[in-house]
Image 1 (tube, helix red, strand yellow):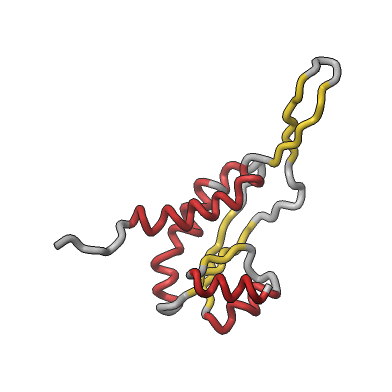
Image 2 (cartoon, rainbow, N blue to C red):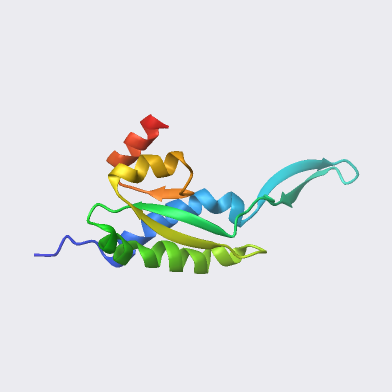
Length: 131
């Protein structure tokens, strides 16, 4: 019988893909379209968000404890995301993973101590209804 344990690719790619989807406007620069009257065509002109921070904190809900969350997600959110998405900026950015428990989750999100958060669907629905 085949094991039901998800592969490392299936565990890492969904959260990284979701986070990169959120960062796409920052990574590639948001684009606005203007009419170029002289040439009679639309020209995409990239512009960049001037208030980018040097470091972003990704809060992770640590259901199995802080050490387990650090071992499971630090390479994804700190190392991999910094190496892939962080280097695409003119001024490179870093991502830092911060484990959170359910008790501190709402306080840290409300006080903007984390820039992004990765939680299970039930915790997300609680956060969504709260904020």
